[in-house]
Length: 181
Image (cartoon, rainbow, N blue to C red; front, side):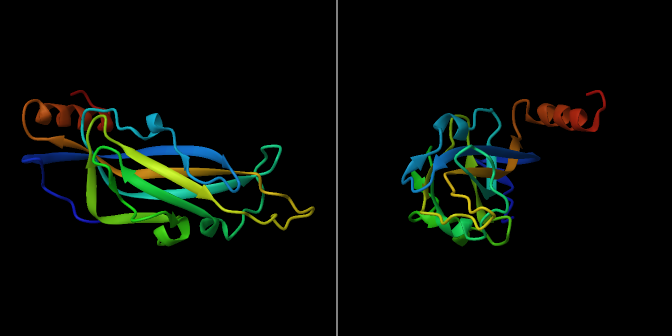
């Protein structure tokens, strides 16, 4: 992960609670400009969500909705995404990118040097394109009909100094450790 700021909007960050926001959608093969449901991509909690990166995964399915095994090794090359910060309309990708180009490893994890902080009612807008996919070479060959694309945003909920922030942090830590606040 990249830089960890000490302040957000002029307030000291007193505690970071690990947090993930996962979304998924299933689209047909050769489907351009399919948009993830916006309600799934909204941060609805009060503490701001400091996002440091994301993981993208994809799984192929046949006509019956059964997962195809083994998965195609070219799958990250066949799927493209565009990610926009919905609260500011700033594109996090300059254009639609192949999933293969975003991740640094087999997990397709994309970490950012500078985090993006999403406040309540903020979120992301994600568009996905699926290319034409060859039949998976299993016996018998199986046609890919659907692709499930899963994106998990990785980061922290921020507890800021100020009114009730220290008390909230104390309660959160006590709850995590299983002791009375």
